[in-house]
Image (cartoon, rainbow, N blue to C red):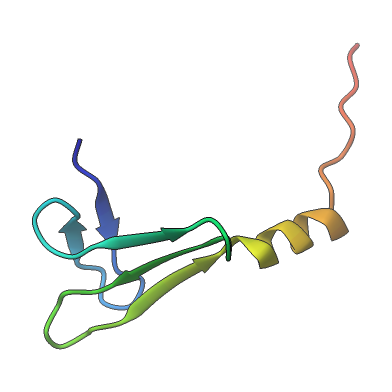
Length: 66
């Protein structure tokens, strides 16, 4: 299985099997990927704690059936 990630800063597409690594930390609830582009080296971080907090404050509307 190949996993592709796109840098949020430079837009370069990386394949995890070829170059780079993806850190999935389930204790801290975050994903991290450091861009392998020599000019960029951006730390792309996705934090799911803030996502959960935002979803609790603004829940999805209730669905109705007709």
